[in-house]
Image (cartoon, rainbow, N blue to C red; front, side, top):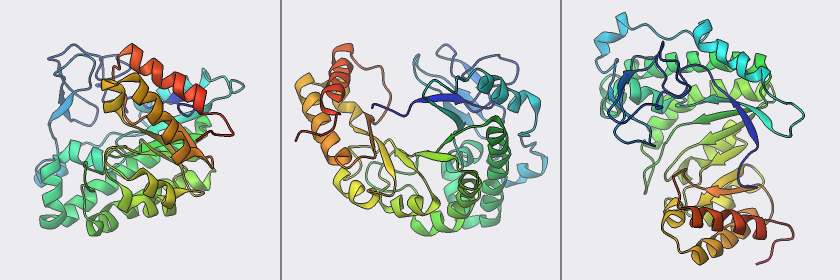
Length: 308
């Protein structure tokens, strides 16, 4: 299995769309495009085939909060898409109906405020930082209510919390500001028996116990170059499934024989006792020969009993 079988649904704006443009993905624009999403964040797309980067943050100045208009999760323009997409779901097709809370908390905060600003405000303007996070989570909970009403079985949450060598935020900041807000959304989904697939790039080994306690059912993408995969499996085995674990850099560069060998070793390391979806740890426009070697290796080595 190279990923969770899902039929995804999402509110209008989850992929950084702008009101009135009619695009399913806010980044379906030519390189050089500039636009403002439903949150007021300004984006610029530099390269075809890749998402844009935020260049304007509407809440960079704490004084702007008083006049800022938060998006309303009950706005029909925002939530209506959820029900339209759910109606197209074939419940006998063997897939999960999955709702996305992309940019769940931390990422949405720095898109609104600016990453450097947000990191500073944790110390210089803690009440402001806390208010931003709380209001973001209010929106996510509103959307979660619509997802639950639409009958989702799996929620896709995510914040990139790691660098290549460590977490972006210290344990005190994470524990004081982010963890209580995560508990609100995780608790909502768990109370309704909805599975949670949480995404975080980078080195997140220090946060694994927190996400197990929160109730994450699946963690992705388990970035191979940023984490000790053996240690990750030791901490999560029997408590949380893993998805990812095969280096995107390797699949981009090859050679194919090394890709096959790595797939085999990773499946055994992370999946010999179950609870593993083998897939690249990032999505990229891979060379055809290399990605075909990856899929062929998963098909060959990803069957029980596993061969070492």
